[in-house]
Structure formats: C-alpha cells, structure tokens
Image (cartoon, rainbow, N blue to C red; front, top):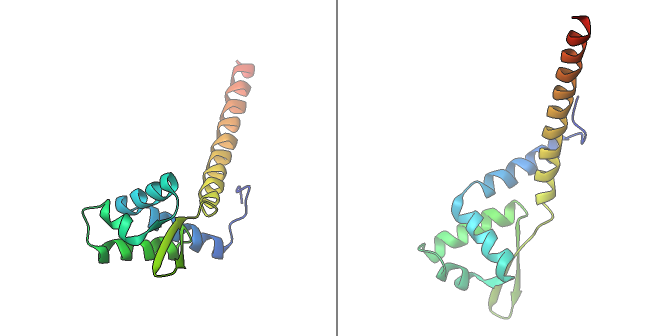
Length: 119
C-alpha cells in the first residue's frame, strides 16, 4: 500500500467520526469559538447561535463522541473545551494523499524525461 502511515480499521473509524463531526457548519463554528475563547459554558455557547440549547447540546455531544471536544464540570457549570489532538489524524490523512500524488507526479516526470531522451 502507498500510504506512509498505515491506516488501521480503528483509525479509519475514528477519522470518519472526526470528519463527519466537523462536516456540519454549526459544529465547525462551535469548534472555532472554543479554539478562540477557550472553555465555555454550554449556555454561553448557545447564546452565540440562533439554535435552541437542546440543538447546541446535541452538536456538542457529537463533537465529544468524535474526541474534538471534552466536558468538565465545575460546580453546576458544564465547561466545554476543544481538543486539538484528533486533528492530527486529518493532517496525517492529507499527508498520505500528498505523498501518493508526489509519487504519481514523480513517475509522470520520469516517463516524460524518458520519452524526451528517446526522441
């Protein structure tokens, strides 16, 4: 296989969960908000969106399930914070794609050079 990082089935499932969670615009906006402002209460996050508290809570649960956000409780407040570590899986996947294209382009260049030398 051409991948520089051999992807195991477990990693594939986690990468799929991360990409699926990040594919929804409101969830991306929540992640961006948390990255910019640090940990926030669920109610403070909800105040920034034109969505119900219940809808925000559901989005946060999807982000938590994908490992992109975590929750901690301080007294009665639930603080949500972004988790950047899972994003390395996306970076690794793109690196694999880039390496595949680099190999293809190198092969094309070699073929073109060989063709030029034969002329």
